[in-house]
Length: 353
View (cartoon, rainbow, N blue to C red):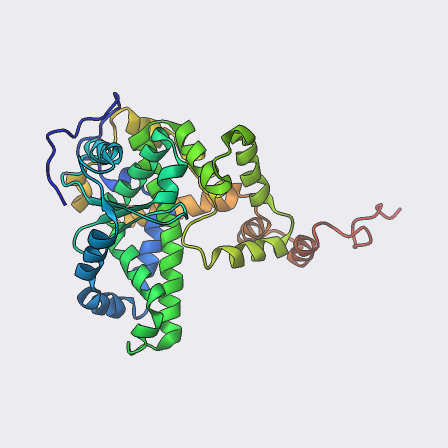
């Protein structure tokens, strides 16, 4: 890493956030999933074991030897974006950044001691300057939140599963930890998307980037409103069978679906919290130690309660009905699975005379 901040000035005028805490942009589901992950039986044992055994030095040497390190001499436009992002989010040390040959558009922030940002050539070639700025801000957000540590553990547990069979928990327990890590990481992506917006300060660029990741470099064939309409259609998604399929589809993924990310980010950009942050009213890192765990739980609980209340997903709505003590739960359950009430169901015909 470099701590050179002499030229950490943004290439165009943007609001800066001195001393900003990651709490300012972290999604409540991110914090809740991380708390749940840390409470998972055996996680501490695995985490401590891997923290001492993961070949992080080897990982750094791998990227140093077989990728291109971003600097003033190589990929200078990315280096400028990286310094820009660190300046805006007030990250004192600029993480090392590498470009690696891979046609799959992707980026990640990994590392146990110090974060490393890696972007693929597929992503660099796909996005324009402002779209890429949001991505770099996204990864710097991961670094500021400390996500790189858990991302590294997930990377090694997933890729080297056969080599951690010695852990005295059994493969089932390791699989449970991998599943929990993936669930947390999907939520952490929503937080990092918000950080990317704070850095880029261009919602349209963030939306374009997500559309390109989903549909390639064909912006003339795509429309933001139609893309967001897909997210709305996905959330409503028929009956309970579709809800179950959505859960099964997302389980093996490290990232949420792009339409969902776009909808979540647009929704946050319209909140009072986002506007207050842009106006300079946000949590500071110096206050992090004083943050109440109880308050964090309360905020997360309020978020989930609001999600249940406003969700259009059939399964979530059913959960809300059950929690609210709605009557005829058997009928509701049947209707949710069949997509609507049966015409011959009791009570659906004309009232008896």
